[in-house]
Structures are given as C-alpha cells and as structure tokens.
Image (cartoon, rainbow, N blue to C red; front, side, top):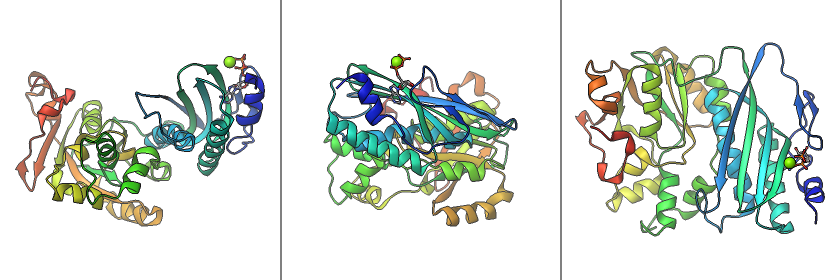
Length: 332
Ligand code: ADP
Ligand code: MG
C-alpha cells in the first residue's frame, strides 16, 4: 500500500465536517475560516513510543490519547476545539493497526466536535504528533495569569491514578486491591475536560491542565499570576484505587506530583461557588476546592520557588518527599 492510498483510506473524513473548513485533507494545506469575533487557540503534542507509551499499547488507545492530550490543552484555554492535524510516523504499514487507529480517532474527534483537516505520514519509529486548533471569544482565553488574592483553587476529577497505573505497570507498586481496568483507563484513555473549560471560561481567573503533576502545574499559575498558593493536601480528590494504595502504606506523592492526569486546576472568586456546584452536577464532573490564593512571601525572590506553594495537611505544614526528584523544588 502506498503512502497516498494509506492517506485516502485512513486519514480522510475523520471527525466532524465543519462548514468553516474551506479545504481539508488532500491539498497542500488546509484552509479554515475564523469568525471575526473569535481567536484561534493552537497547541501541539507529540507521543513517542518508548518515551510516552509502552510498545504494547493498542492503536485504539493511542488514537484516543493523542487526541485527549491535545483536547485537554483546549480545555485549559477555555477554547472550543474545532480542527486538528496529525503527523504520523510509522515503522511499517499495518492495515489492522491503521484501521483500529483511524476508527478510534474518528470516534473521539467526532465526540468532541473536531475535524481532522490534514497531516503528514512518514516512515520511522512510531511517533504521533497532533496539532489542535480551537475557537475562543476574542480576549477571553483562560490563561495561567490572573489568579487573585482570596480566590479558591479547584481541581476537577481525581488525582494520581495515571501515575499509579504507570507504577503498577512498571512493577514498582503491587496492584493489590486496586481496580486495574480503572487505572489503565486513566493512563491510556484520559477524559479531557473540554465542557468544563468552556463552562468556566467566563469567570475562572486562571486555569491549567494537569499534565506534569498538580504541584508542578499549579506553580505555573502562581508564577504567572505573581501570587502564592496554599494547598490543603488532605482535600485531594482520590479514587477508591488510590485509597487502597494508601491502605497498604502508599503516600500522596503520586496524587501530588504524578503526571498524565489531564484534569483542570483553576482559580475563581469564592462568589462563584454555587455556579460551580451547578456546573459540577450538570457535567457529572467532580470539582474539589483544594486550596486558595494567598499573598506570596516578601522574600520570595531570594528563596526560590518553594514559597509559591505552601502545602498543609489538616492545618500542619506538609513536606513532599524530595527524594523523588522534584526538579521544581530544587534550590530550597
Ligand atoms: P505534501 O506532499 O504536500 O506534504 P502529503 O502527501 O504529505 O502532502 O499529504 C497529502 C495530503 O494528505 C495533505 O492534504 C495532508 O494534509 C494529508 N495527510 C497526510 N498525512 C495525513 C495524516 N496522517 N492525517 C491526516 N491527513 C494527512
Ligand atoms: Mg507531507
């Protein structure tokens, strides 16, 4: 099979077809129309076999994940995802793999209202790169800046399960009573919080998606917003699998700093609490108040990034296990 029939068969008509797409797959470039009251939010993510995923992950789950990690970036910006392009590097042409990949990609992109409008196909080690584009009202994109003193810090969903799954797969942690299916699905098929991002776009003061771990990512908010965050560790939303892990001597490190959760962390003025409760029940998405925005210490510039984030457990200072190599805490 040639590169061209591969594209015809597996890369055409994926996702939803938008009227605002003037030219899609098949020409030298795609052409899209942006309404005059909107701006385009653009993001790209790459997944490399052996770096971002194990060689045995199914084509179906890979398609889901490359879309989900990109959709999560749209969610974090409060943007409505619309278009995507896909650069595929494949070691060889395996039609079963391509058929499963293509079907899964179509399913997930259709679900989130995205059209695949182009890409590139090359031979090489298995690597997936997706670029995603979405629309946001002019000047209304949610950013990491803007968190204000007194704002509440919220997080969606539950934390740490993807990192827990990875540790179980690597044999670092015994699976014990944990729900393997649930953990695997958190790692390989994360659910991007697109609807939540759109709902909070109008009033959240800052937002980020948690791809590198809660502690690292909320510090980006603190830094960009020039404030500090006080995090109540005892309030972290955890799954029953994570609770089993705690029962057998696990700690909160994976929930605090494990990656790949793809939940949203955002800040909002406390006056929006009732609205958020409503959004949470309408979307069926857990939203937990896990901390608040506080003034940063005066000596912050001389004492490193530690003071951007103060952790406490039931009111007492809480120390992260620094032996785990948290680069963000270096220099403390
Ligand atoms: P060019 O030679 O101009 O780079 P290609 O032969 O790479 O064009 O691609 C032909 C058409 O197929 C283009 O419209 C391109 O966007 C599309 N395409 C190629 N690979 C993919 C892919 N993996 N997914 C979606 N569209 C693709
Ligand atoms: Mg090309």
